[in-house]
Length: 376
Ligand SMILES: *Cc1c(COP(=O)(O)O)cnc(C)c1O
Image (cartoon, rainbow, N blue to C red; front, side, top):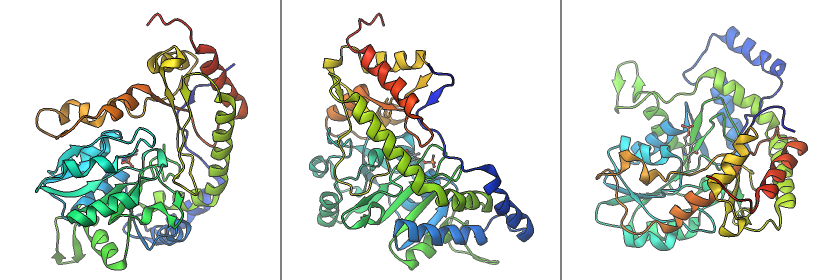
């Protein structure tokens, strides 16, 4: 049985005593923020670990997204996916940009490049796709459209820490990529995020924007924001980075176990991500089809009744929230694939701290609930 609740994600916390020396260094330096030594070390370490040209740390992934849009002076309309966390759309609205929602590819859950062109208007300035669940977008097709129509590409790469395709980090694609280091993500700094950028000049511009636009004591060149990561968050990132390979390996084992135990359950469709060469096992989304007998929501309730907090990522669609209706966004064509994903997908718990027994218990409920009559 289950003796404690199991949440969809659990943060990876290294042993507390390993964090104390970092705190001692911060106390000794009296540098608490503003590009201090921990911040500089974490930027260098992440650049190496991820294999990206430049990275600018942020206090969270949402401010990173907002700033990425500002840095490229994006305006007008931006084509994006409705099958995401609300921060994707919110970042556009906060910049006075109209989100244009386009349907997803039902296989990958990512923005369908074949549907993008029909949504382009003279006001379109950029495409903002999401590597949903850490599964890479069709970056080549998206770049080709962007080149043809002279559009920028900003990836919401919140889920994509450490993911690689044949050529290396998935974060190198597009003009900019924004990542999240929130507690629920694969790599966390409690709260945090970053923008991956192609060169030092772009990084300088972004670093300036995240520090109020301040150049020196008397010169402010832009209406920037406070997007800085503190030393304590950066220090935790440095410690987390020492453990991240082990944590991702453990996630891979959990993924493997789920696939083994859920194989062949009628109506349960397992994730089939194939574009990446290195995965981060960020989520374990399963699709609950007709053949299962119970609806996705019924399964969600069955799990909850056993203290298992799976999540319906992403339901409702971003475009269905009230703030997006009534002229705040555009949906030029049907979102039918996104809609059915929102109705059928459930993310089972996935984290490095899940035990084999816990995964076994979750799978037992999924298997045992199949075909039972619902009184919902
Ligand atoms: C987590 C997340 C964000 C926001 O990141 P925060 O660090 O929580 O601000 C943005 N987009 C997606 C798709 C996310 O999952």
